Image (cartoon, rainbow, N blue to C red; front, side, top):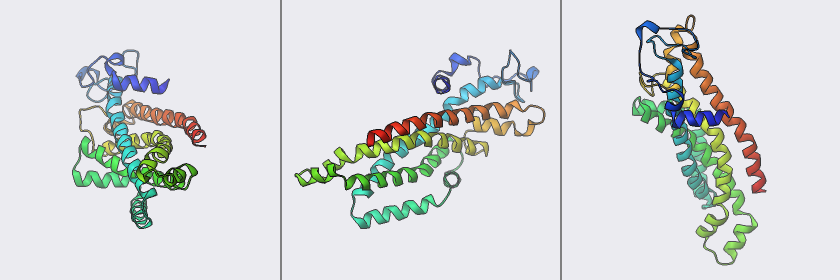
Length: 257
């Protein structure tokens, strides 16, 4: 139910919050949550509920884009490493291990530092930071499937290795990465929000969960709702995605067996 609500808020925010999230009102500054303003108002008199709802699409888009690109790149590069000659496999594996020695958030931060702040830099940074995990899992899965009876029998009966890889290895790699993608989506959203919290992503007055938490950090003593409400939205999204990923992972593992 939470994911369904998040999806509607991301795709059709005007159905839930029809008011302009950028509209200011000097006479309604720092109002506490009420029936008129369920999440209160911020220091500019903007309705926090409207801003949280309209920020959903911005925050979710970064996670989806990062996971989608990482899924495709990881599947192709990891599968290539798993079925490639040993020397090429070693080169790709060592490169991935070096990158994975650094925290994902630090990698994203370095990319943003090079490219400059902005939503595009954040999207690129988050994407690059999550790709190594996908490549590593794809390589492990491809190496295991390469010695399976289906792949070896297919090559033995004259099927080209490239065709056999597409038929018997790539589908298994995709199934393995799907569960990682669901969990990785939450991590990507958190990383993007963290960069925006530091002022490196979306810039004011555009509503975004991380940016909204940053804007309210100086008013926690008298207007806690400015930061807490978008923080709760972020936490609920990650928890809901994680809960859904567990049965999905079990289902995919059963299918692979």
